[in-house]
Length: 159
Image 1: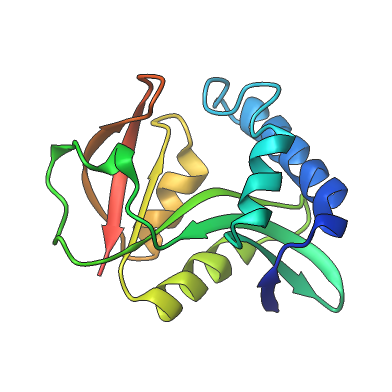
Image 2 (image 1 turned 90 degrees about the vertical axis):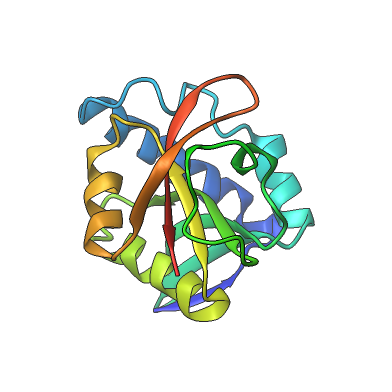
């Protein structure tokens, strides 16, 4: 597998992956994290424009998409708990995979860790698959953060 930056030509493929992820979430008891229109197309276009959207491919087939940024995330400034450290970090958001791409999420998260060293990530309390993945990958639960709209998320870090 390999990771590359997402291009505008990939946008329809990416949006289809997010539609598949929303359906998976709903079928697995996580009906509140990603609503029908999340993430919106304009947000993904912005991620691409900022150079923060990445794809995971194997043999030319797109298996997953994620956003990673090394800019401080303002929603991480206030945490009910404590981060493991205050060192620079990357943040992963909007990670999703195709239906038949088992293990690719872990591959993408590990790629970020290898590239950036310190990773912060958050997820909804009902996202059991992601919670298990983060635990299996050695992430430490740090506390609760709040999104700009007030929604609460469980926050994790790996150093």
